[in-house]
Length: 464
Ligand code: PHE
Image 1 (cartoon, protein in one colour):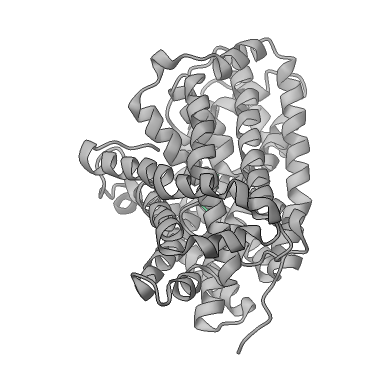
Image 2 (cartoon, rainbow, N blue to C red):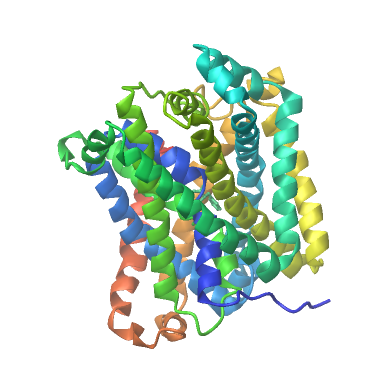
């Protein structure tokens, strides 16, 4: 039975919901880590260029596909490709996106679950006790991720919260949570940044992030910047297509797209300022591990005054950021079931939420709890376990391939007359810069993404 389609209450609702999707573990954990690994400076500049030249044009493209079709990705491609080269074959891009949403959510919510446990431990004082004992945080973290019951509990709680938000629909669920959480997130992050500015490592952090050092930039770093631009902006799997489909005709695509990308970038940079100030203040050594957020930082929080409060605010910040991202991942899968299978929203969110949680058990138990799951090896020794294999599959393949196809479809298959018409809806002055966007979506974005895919296949590079 056809159901009335949800809509955002206006431009701000869309911007906050989409920025909520974009801002997540990618900003608060992954970006600081890869920036550190790539020596800051030049890498940050290249990342900003990747956001502007690849991410932003594809962001506009996804919003166009969603708003023009008023459908979630599979239906959007079916409707817009009708009578054009490739026809309904383009639906495959939509299915790829739904699969990516399902897979990413199944492991993303496991890490998100950790933030609940750490928030709780910061408040109860347990984290402070662990931090006081050398090595105890590491031991705890290792034991915690290998504890199957604890992992299922964290993942289950986070999935249930996500389902509860998506259950209530576009305006009263997704938008309401985002408009409540995003401002709080900004306040917490800004307060942490102000605090960071008072630490002795602040100056070193700023010069690390912004000093130009092109000599230290590698081709690997270049690709990593482009790849991360996709993940962090939630591009390549139809999340923004889906959110764009709930957008009103009066809302400007370029203004909201720019606002989302700017918020995402500012938050990623602020997160870096906070973390690097702390890292440089205490002269810490950062190693490649999801543990930086859960082992290195808590140890330091408790050396600063007000450590418990600082740690609790920090983990609440990460939990909120992750929640608005998991909501968008579940919405892609749910809106597919609603639009394509004709399910009610309630049935879609409960069934798909349960299915993703059940599938996610494989991830939750692959961090030490179950030997076979922990040692699964599909993509080589550096990605052991179901969790790491799925992250590798999604980040290195599904998102870049999806993004490439979305750029080709919007740039070459849709007629520029149609894309211009959609861009002008809600933003009448678009004609002057439209050719610039068209050149980016036709040439620059596909070439940059094509270079990533080529380098993964032929040069064996990875960018996560
Ligand atoms: N953008 C989110 C982050 O940075 C992750 C995400 C990817 C969310 C794809 C939705 C879709 O954490």
